Length: 270
Image (tube, rainbow, N blue to C red; front, side, top):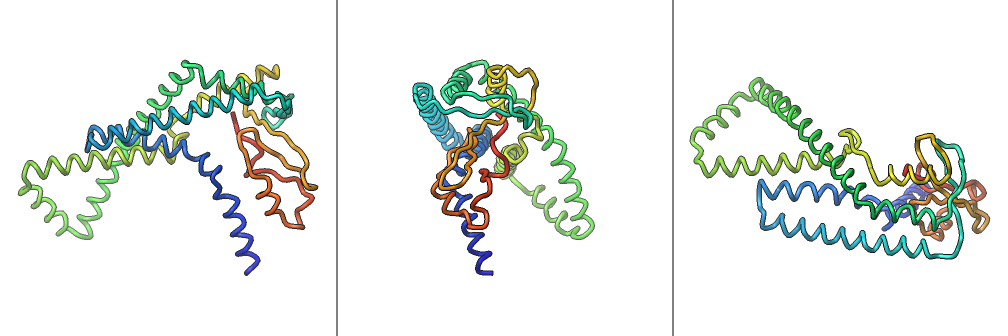
C-alpha cells in the first residue's frame, strides 16, 4: 500500500507541472474570452469590459513572447532535427530552425486567424443551438418531475411570479441570461470538437510540414526526436518541453532500460 501511494505521488508530481498547466491555458483563455463578452450584454459591463480587455492584452503579450522564442530558434545554430511521422509512418525529418520558421509563418498569417475566428463562430452557433434545444427539454422534464412528486412547489412558484414586480422579473431574466452564457461557454470548453472545432493553426502547420517532406497524403503529423541520457532512451515530442532531471528521477530500476515516452502518445497532431 505504501509503495502504491508513493508511486501515485510521483505520478502526480510529474503530471502537475507548470509546463502541463501552461499547455491547458488555451482552454481556460477560450472559456473566459467567450464568457466575459457574453456577460457584457447580460450582466455587468463595468466588470466584464476591463477584464476582457486585460485578457486580450495578456494574450497579445504571450503571442509576442512566443514569436520572439521562435525567432531565436530560427537563428539558432545547434542544427538538431525532428523525425516526422504521418499516420504513424516515418516520412523524413525537419531541422528545428525550419520547423520554427513554419510556425512563425503560420502565426503571422492573417488568413489563418480569420479562418480560426470563423470556425469559433461556427462552434459558438452550434453550442447555442445545442443549448437552445437541450434547455427546454430539460425544463420540461424538471417541471414534469415537480408536478408528479412535488406539486406544491409549482403552485408556490406560480404564486410568486404573479406577485412579482417588474424589477424582480428583470433581475431574474438578467441572471438567467448570465447563467445561459456561462452554460454555453462551459459546454463549449468541455466539448469543442463535438461542436465542430478545428485548430486552423495546427492544420496549417501540418500542411506545411507535409509539404516540406514532400508528402501528399493527409493525416496526423507527429514530430519527435530521441536521444540517450543516463542510459535511458528519451523520446521528446516537438510540442513539449520537459524537465528531464525530474523524469529520470521518477524512473524505477525495473523500467530503467525501457524506452520512455512523454504522455499517452509521442507527440501531437499538428
